[in-house]
Image (tube, rainbow, N blue to C red; front, side):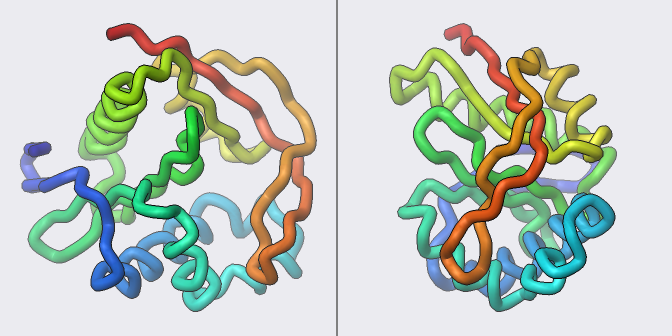
Length: 167
């Protein structure tokens, strides 16, 4: 369990009953971080329903942190990758991001994985600074696949970061 001036519980796996609230959080947080970075056509496609429709695809490896008001953080793992990592506005600056990342890395370690990987959008310097402060190292700046609501992928410039996990 996570604790701070705000009381956080989790992370726990999300279940279908959580999908609407998680999709709303993910939509808001994604737009906060990316609306000014991505092409307008792609941003318009990132609707609440597009996030809602994507959640079942994480096959039980999506994680949720809550407070007394509902979801405050959402993350997903895919293999060694932290594929999604988003916090609600009210949780930013509370220390929750670091504690959630610690929990995700512990999950990866418990699976016998020694490396964590992630992509960070070029221009999202707040997130990039956070990842670097957590021990991630940039190994590439390149075009990477980005999920599109139609189920296809586009490529956009990303920072590729990795971290060696220690038990």
